[in-house]
View 1 (tube, rainbow, N blue to C red):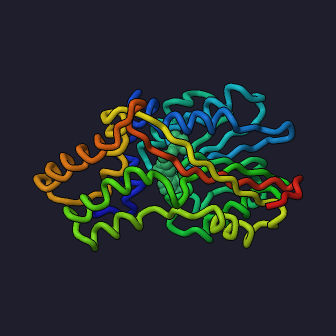
View 2: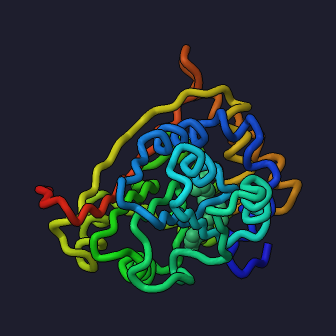
Length: 276
Ligand SMILES: C[S@@+](CC[C@H](N)C(=O)[O-])C[C@H]1O[C@@H](n2cnc3c(N)ncnc32)[C@H](O)[C@@H]1O
């Protein structure tokens, strides 16, 4: 696939299936739900921004449990994801969806009270520019919850499947596909944000949660999301998929096949004088 931004194009291609049961019940759907239930809008918040809002699930759920005078804005670069989000919000007047990304947010400086994002920040193409953009749009006393995957994400799968992908893709393509996302350590994330925000207001918490699922359950998201970055001829792909499925089955335990999400939770809380 020759794509301007393969990540964005891929999400646009799979948008219509993004909210099907397979994805919602997958480790990613379950992890996103946990995060969503932890988000807290404060009493004074007037403008709430979700960057990489996907199909708008979080936005519409938050809006339904919040004051009607709060303005909710979703930013999403993938066209078909935006279409799904627009369909979901229907005629809800206090939610709008914009075509944009972390690197360039089309909002006035210092206009956002609360910025959150669920599993999108690891896809940015320019880390520094993205953090500067977040800083620009947040009000000086604005707060933020950013959830994204960290360096150790999905180690079980990586250990099992890397030798297979290396064999079928060759070293150059294999490295290229691995470079598509940025996976920071907690310390790197903290350093990045502390260089742009007041370090006393920044904190980074990491978690490693293991989710168990069947092979088909994992295969659903794996093939649709990660699978798009695995470029090879269809015949080769079939043989590779067979080996990958076999390798993942080897991971089976009584509870199912484990996948550990390494999640970084980066917060900005101007009211807080946090100790790292
Ligand atoms: C795993 S989905 C998460 C969607 C949504 N936040 C959710 O929890 O369902 C990642 C989203 O990030 C978007 N994305 C990719 N690159 C981005 C960027 N540079 N800035 C903002 N969003 C981006 C994708 O198009 C996709 O919709």
